[in-house]
Image (cartoon, rainbow, N blue to C red; front, side, top):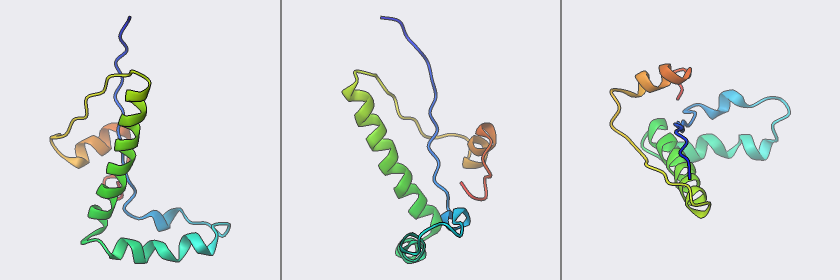
Length: 91
């Protein structure tokens, strides 16, 4: 079996309200600030959201016999955000 190397970066928007439009239903808009405020910070909320997505991704990969190796300990969040083209102030 051959190998394929790929990097997947998970990022959560610390200001998801910025993505709302006039078409976004009120039932989606209203609870977001209240949910985020239950965490100690927007960054803590984003970390939890990202962790859930990563766990599902890792489980799905394993179900398809794809080997994964989650990593952390990068120089900085800003360096990773800049490397993949995200705004470090939001992600």
